[in-house]
Length: 109
Image 1: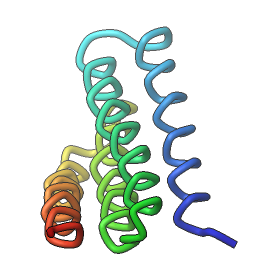
Image 2: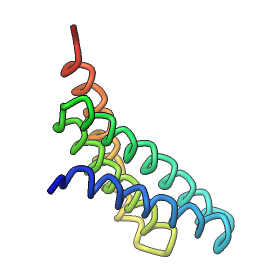
Image 3: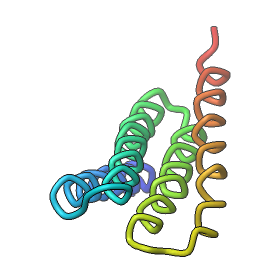
Image 4: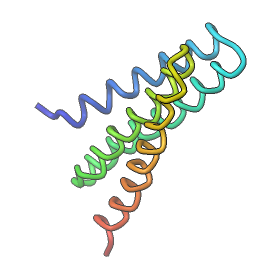
């Protein structure tokens, strides 16, 4: 079973759902948080699949984990979680940046 592909696909599905909710079910700051979270999560779900196809799974897992932490913390804030949840967002962002750097290192010539 290809767990990375499964988690990347689920991440993409969550991103689309959150984006749709942000576009049609909320407004103002909540909509912006959902839009930002879904945008980053969807991009990194695809990036995880690309990393998998390049046979470098480490960066793919970094994209999935970082996307989850980054986006889900924004989703939680959008639906009223305490602002303290926002401390998770930069951890997810660091994993996303690290994933890109790891991918660059892994595919270097």
